[in-house]
Picture 1 (cartoon, one colour):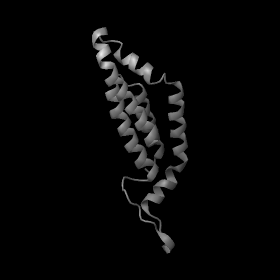
Picture 2 (picture 1 turned 90 degrees about the vertical axis):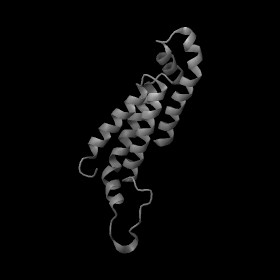
Picture 3 (picture 1 turned 60 degrees about the vertical axis):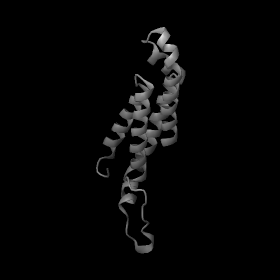
Picture 4 (picture 1 turned 135 degrees about the vertical axis):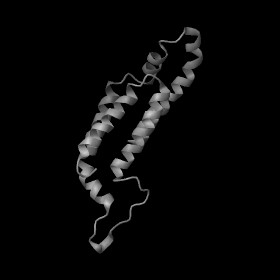
Length: 129
């Protein structure tokens, strides 16, 4: 992470694009959960829940080193997500496109489930990032 953070940035960008380009709400929600977990690890400097502060000892923790090396890239990821959200048609458009290939009778029954899955995906991205 500290040697080549730009690679993680490219991976995160691709994963976010996969959320907004997903063919169904279920796949979008699953990808959004993955993006949120990777984002959290990237922004916090690791997957540990607790990071011990170095205090006055002058020593630097691993998390602090990772955060220093990745802090310049965080804004790029946020800007990319905001740009994708701006270009995206919204939840209703996503539901319409994912249900477009179904039979009209089945489409009506599946609409509420698909709508809730897309909303779940959008909420995961918004809350995670």
